[in-house]
Amino acid sequence: MNRHFADVLLGSIELFCLAAELESFKDAANAAGLTPAAVSRSIARLEERIGVRLFVRTTRQLRLTEAGRAYFVQCRQALNQLVEAEREVSGQQMQPAGLVRISMPTPYGHYRVLPLLAKFRQIYPLVKLDLQLSNRNVDFTADGFDLVIRGRIPPDSGMIARRLEDPEVVVCATPEYLQRVGVPVKLEDLDQHECLQFVLPSAGQNVVWIFRRDGEDVDWPTKGGLTCSEDLLGIITLARHGAGLLQASRFMVEEDLRVGRLVEVLQEFSGRTRPFSLLYPRDRHLPLRVRVFIDFLIAELAQD
Image (cartoon, rainbow, N blue to C red):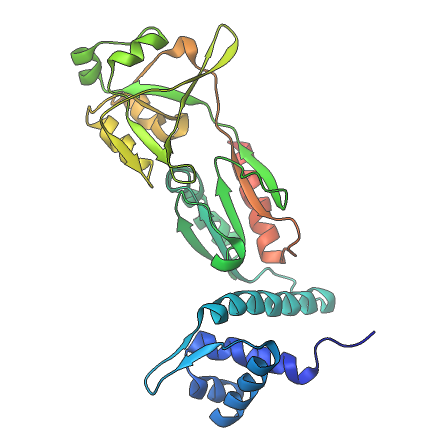
């Protein structure tokens, strides 16, 4: 079998990643114990091989081209996997270590995941976590994430989905709002209410409210003059200040319900759920640090 990568080429890829991270040929050279000219020649050979310009060089700045950024993400991932494989085979990585990057919806992060992370770090102090709280879909390769949590699983056969939990959704409002506008007793009453709207980023459409009536699942479009996008916590804040009715996962409002800040309505039509799952690419090797984080989240949230 012909070799695709020579030792020199792998070395050039390492120097390319180092220069990209440090944004300097000089600093990369110092870190690698080489001269800046040697680093420059090595990266020039790499650019010649792949036929793509990787850096834009000026007297003041070194920055990646668009193609260079895409190449860097995949090269860094590949190098990390090589290091991880070597550690696992040699038995050096007895304790998980390194960085895990994860994206999750804002409310799920605040209410479910972030409260667990101090405990995780006590168990695995060498594992660092880089957290993005966002409701937007991410590109694993381009954005460099190891894991994402989503309330809806994208129709992508290349993804593995691990169910975290399946929380019930509830409809609620402040006592003051219900006294002012009235308490809805049937789904048709929602047409007379201010129903706080959340725009699903991936679809650009308002989230349809869901119910169970007479043993059947019912999707119920609602309307209202207040719409939030990006952050579901926005409509929770609106509801807490008497702006209208809110439908959300019970865990987001359970403290408000307990103290009477919000009151649950339409309980006769409750029972529907919106699941949350942990996603990662099917064809990606999972380092030990990622595997232990997956196992920790599933164990903790399954207990709840």
